[in-house]
Amino acid sequence: MKAIYFADMPKLEPVDTSEAMPDDQITWRRILEEESEVAEVFNELGSVRRKHHRWSRFIRRHNTTPKARLCKLVGWHACNPRLRSQTAYRLVMERMWELVL
Image (cartoon, rainbow, N blue to C red):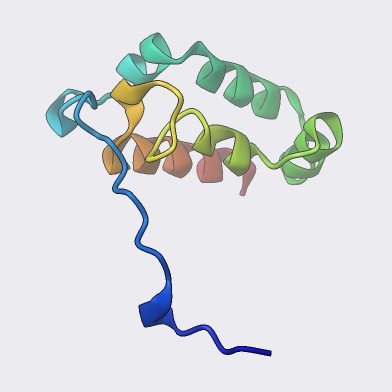
């Protein structure tokens, strides 16, 4: 078995954030305007009355976690290039954790 060293790992291409909204323009409302699926995830989580069941019920319905779903909608790997920013990711994740914890 051959050892692979970190220095030998191929370099990844940087994420293209050229179309991302400026940080000072990112608000919760703007995120929901840009990506309505974010609101759908939050509505589904909020519809579960017992807070401690929200995470597991989402996983059972979608075979993925709410966080994994939201990571495809905001942050570096967002489908919408306007939401490829750390600020958008942080804002959405903070709200998600408030809702499920």
